Length: 329
Image (tube, rainbow, N blue to C red; front, side, top):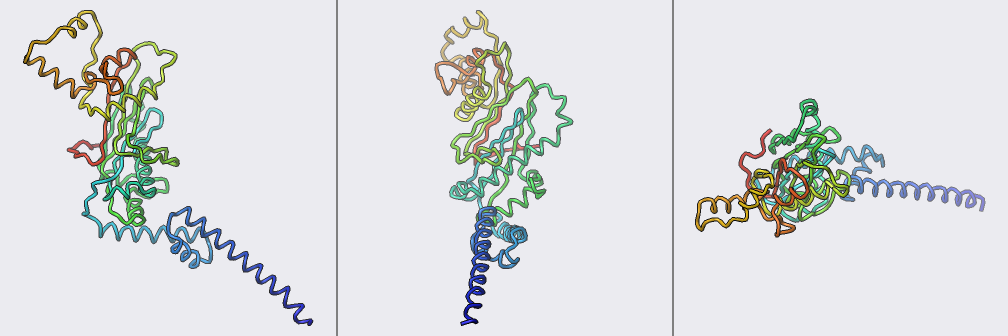
């Protein structure tokens, strides 16, 4: 009876300590799974390997995933990446658009892939920040373009290159992907930049990046006194919606509205005249001559005159479109 009396407390302490260990292990397993996105099996293996040490387990998982990612990247290299996403991120008077491609639309909807697009956009903005000295004297708008190969060398938050992070993401999603292009736009303090993404898949909260199949940036400025209800973010978004939907090739010339030009615009052109033909082409390709997407009763030129605006420059990305030397630094 005496021995049994001693044994019961010991058993209770043993069971209590075992439950505490199991509880801690389970908590770390859930935390590691949530933080890294790796499978429960791999997370459990890592915790077992390092005695339930969360930091060592995470570091080992990242190392193994990157090794596996490089291996998969090598095996999958050359497989067509026709799908993907456009990522758009804006910080004040600086904005960027990036295109990252993958093999299937299924992976394009994957949170790991979308997170990588956000990292690529953030890295592009950080790259633009490295050129602040030469941009200090900027009086208008500047665009800086990068190829996919140049993007590979961009540095992300933890000092890994974007190429290294791409390999890590390939290891997670199991599908080939490629960095296609990036464009950064920066404007002087008296200018505005608008941005828009169409067919939004998801907003990346941590990176403040919007991702979708189409994206646009536009730079503009006020040419008259700002009205009390002037909202540059709203104006920029609406102009970008037009750019995405109507695919202009250039801004066109801003014309002063005078009595003479109004009379000219109201005159009916002669049938089959060269001027009529040129005007038709311009109305399809020049942004200011196009019918405004959100109100076809006016042109974009009418809109900017009404709002006292001048459109300086714009850019439009469509996922998967052919690019011919449009991403140069």
